[in-house]
Image (tube, rainbow, N blue to C red; front, side):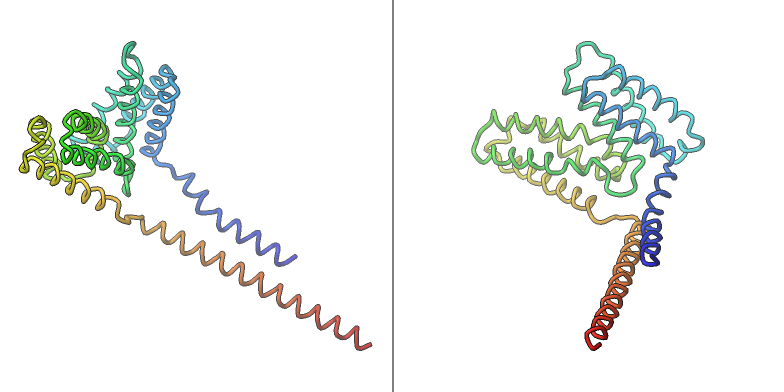
Length: 264
């Protein structure tokens, strides 16, 4: 009975950090949740519901006392523009589904970039973005101009989705360098094939983006999370060790009892 009581206490202790974190949702975390819900509504083509959520987001964001001072003017502008684009995507009668999804995804990634201190969601698009660039390089090597243009357009589309959120997380000088590289490649796309200098520009962009994604994907876990992991892990080990020890003692006592009975 005592063992079961201790096990119950250990379970309650393990659940405590989860309950505390659930109760401590900040206002910006709430906005992050609203942006995700709006994206999910557009995904299933419930545009009216998405519009209501975006209106609710605007109201909640405006009511945040003092939070706006934590953002730069550029960041506030990015949030405002991405929100306006998302609203337009929910009310436009002629916009294609993919464009609606792109805009809501951009908005979702922007709000996550604002609310997240570690590994923002936009870094999760690394594989897709880098794949299109590698395909474009391969197209150049095979002198396939139509496919190169198609793959470069795919890259531009994906990059434009994550670009606003990148501007929130990445230093301005890094963004400016990427802008210059991409503008050059886009302007001279017709001359890419057969020109080694232009191919080097594409290789440079690929390397810089790869490094950027790698740097952003490094382990940036909040130290407090490590405390929770270590403490809960220790509790689990202690609980299992204690239960195992008591079971060992019980088995040992049982064997002694059977031995005495056999003697008599």
